[in-house]
Each structure stands twice: as structure tokens, then as C-alpha cells.
Image (cartoon, rainbow, N blue to C red; front, side, top):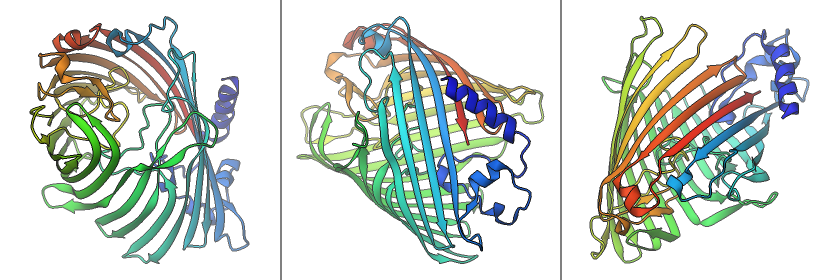
Length: 457
């Protein structure tokens, strides 16, 4: 930890006055530092981001990373079904990448990830502790690169994120991010963007350099986005095929072949923000046919001309669950590879068989500190289905209780971006366990608090 503090201090002192700094991207490989090629007044940090290899500066390296330190405290984790830890625990994550650009046609991107969980009770799973592994290693070939059309083929281990991240996410909130082994073709033409992909999920393991491609979890499809659409602003349409040779739901398991069709309209840039998305899933689970769906709406309004810029919003969802245990159908939505903390870090419920309504409010102070409060009321959509984690492992079966109401969660967060490199966050949650959780398990209220310090460079 001392090394992290010293490094933060040195970096902050050296680059806080640097010019031409760009915001960091959630997908670090999307960052472009080629603009430094013709800059003659570079700092040591600029040379870290753009280090030429040849005399014409057409071959260069870019180096970066991400260090995050978190302290978390639970009382009654998993509603009292986990062993009690009176001291809390820490999560640390290191990400370091090297990005090699070879002229304008080729590129090699590699990234190492190291994640540790200290004082964790019980033992941490690979999503929290994965000491050292090759997280990304891919090659880009820009087959077409013109002002009007870009076509890139990407092959290798890579992070993949589409749209709202409801189905395919980098899973940033838990300690270890997720990646995939696969190939993609990315086509960009003006406001049109198309991704065609085929990939296997990379299964995290608790050893060193032992993460492996999981052929039992593969997905493929196409994701199309169009911006500057009249009235709607932005529109996405997609198809995702998913195969899992060992699926397990509340009403049975087996070989899963699932097809997801979705559409999204959204605008998150203006004062009134909205994100409306719907999906339908079909296919088979062993001998059962799949017919599942979900609809999600996020909407908010920011009073940008008002002091503190208050923003008031609401999120609501309907996510189908299984109707009957005895028929040859399953209506349970599979969220595939979603964000790891769908309702925050406190309650580990994934987006399957749920109804929820989620009002929220936030303000921004003069020093750019964002304070937010929200409340989520959560019910089971179907009484003949249970609740699941984000990876679709079951928390409780629907046969363990007859009530619909799961509970409500009150959360508060303070976010302070100290500068472009350092982000500080702290927060709390109280999950008020209600009838279904008391029927299915211990049913204790969860109390949760955390602090987080993150450095990107």
C-alpha cells in the first residue's frame, strides 16, 4: 500500500499540470495517443504514452495501467448465510498494459491483471483473487482505414463490452475484470458501427498464469449501433448466440443453446437522459424450449443551470422468470456476462426473474464531488423461480418460499475525482430483507460500507 501512495504522489506532482491530457476510457485499448507524435514539448508522462521505436515515429509504444485499492465491510453478508467477518477485508487490483502500434495497419495490445483479497472470510473466489494472469493479448489488423470507412479485425484475448453492459460487460465493480478469447470484425462508417464476433469466455482461476479459454461458455453474434438518429438520438440492435454445456436453472439444467434478440434507444448526453432496452430470448435448455424476455428503462433529468446540478431519475425493469416447474418450457432470462454488481456490491442478485423500481437523486458540488442516494425495491417476477447471482448460480430456489417481495436497498455514494488520474469513492448500503429472504434463508438485513482509491495512468 505504501508503494501505491508514493507512486500516486509522484505521478500527481509530475503530471497534474500536463497539457493535452485525454480522459481515460473504460476500455483502455480505445485510448489514442497518436496526437503526441508531432508534439515537441513532451513531458516524461507524454513519453510514457507515446514512445517512438523508429525514426519516422510511425511505430510506437504506449504504456499505461490501473491500480485500485478497496476496503469493504459486511454485516450479514448474503443476508446472514455467510460466516461473519467483524474486521472487513481489502481488495487490490493491478492492471498494466503495453500497446504497440506498427504504422497505421497493425497493433499488438497486451495487459496483465493481478487481483488480491486480503483477510477475506471465507476464502475468496477467482472473481476476487487471481494473483497474476494474462488478461488481454490481441492483434489488430486495420484492413481498411479511410476517412469514411474503418474495418478492423481483432483476434486474441480481449475485453468486450456492448451497449449498456446488460449482457456483455467488463465486470469492473468486482475485483477481477473478465475477458474473452475470440475474433471480431469492427466496421465503422460515419454514424454506423457494426461488431461481428465469436468468442469463448476466459475462466478465472486462483493460480498464476492459469486462466484458460472455456469452450463450455461461448457466444457469437452481431451488435449494430447508429448515432444521430432523428428523435431517438441513438439506436442499437443486436443478436447474441450463447452456448453452455452445463447450465443449471431452478427448473432443471443441461445443454443450453440460447438466442438473444435486442433493441435499445438511448441518449445520455443531454439534460433529459433515457435508456430503453428490450430483449427476447429463445432456444433450448436440454429438452425444454426457452421463451424469456426483459424490458428496462432508465430515465433522469439534470437541472444543469441550477446550483449543485441536481439530477433526479428512476430505473425500472421487468425480467421474466420460469412460470411452471412441470412443463417443457423455461422463461428464465439468462443475462450472459453482465456487470458483476447489478444492484451494487452489497446485494449480489443478478438480473433474472425480477421486478424492480429504483429512484435516485444526485448533486455535484463546486469541487466536483458527486453525492448520490438511491433506493431499490425488488420483487420476484415469478413465484415458480428463484433468485440468482450474476453468473446464474442459484442463491435460493423458488420452492423455498411463497412470497414475492425480496426487499429494499438504500444506498449512498460519494465520488471525488481528485484529478484526471485519481478517483476516490466511498459508500454504504442497507438491504432491508423482506418476506421471501426470510422464508428461503436466514433473512438478516445486510449492512455494507466501502472505500475505494483508484489510480489510472
